[in-house]
Length: 301
Image (tube, rainbow, N blue to C red; front, side):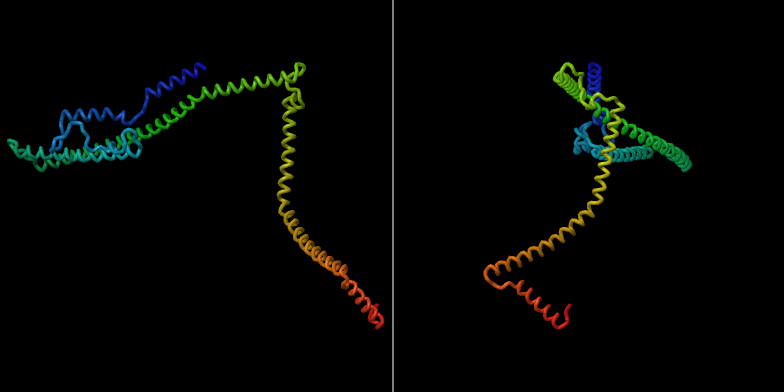
């Protein structure tokens, strides 16, 4: 399979060349930021620090070698906070510088009320434009995030398909080996049946498609009939079960009576064998005497 092998090799080469990593993409930003700090120093006044060294870095504690979405969000919030502080410090330094220059300048810079009003009017327009730019940037960011998520899903799909592509040649080879083994087995069985027979000649093996479908339909109909009988038997089973339980109860009663009669008969037989009185015979003679007396008295029939 040269075409499949070539495609697999090209896909593997693309995977090796296109290793996506957020930290790799951001390395240029960090390097440019370090060079800028080394060249221009720091805005804030205070103790001197090593140029390019980041003393407060969220990624240093969240594992920069294996970033997760949660760690990246925490790092982004950290950098936003740092940028806000830096922006405030910059505005503070610029304001102080302008104020000092206006005082110590020759001549001193005096701003009138009209100039302040004009500047405020200009600032209102600049702020509106800035809000519009921020909205455009936010829309662009949302669009880029959506595109990024789509690309990430497509990349994950490509990686999954690439893994399947790596195992596909082996599975195809195994399937071809099984097919060849089955063909060899079929030829072996055909050879065992003899040269005078054309392949499989058993009953039902040389039918046409229509006859095969008819037999299949007949078998399915018979199977459906058996299933209906099974369903009917299942519905009748509770009633039959109750009848069996009632018969078992009656049988237990009859069994107890039978045992009682057998015990009584055995007792009478034992007593008779020992020379004792036969209570049954005595009771019979007594009832005959009672019957004769009643007839004599005219009370019986």
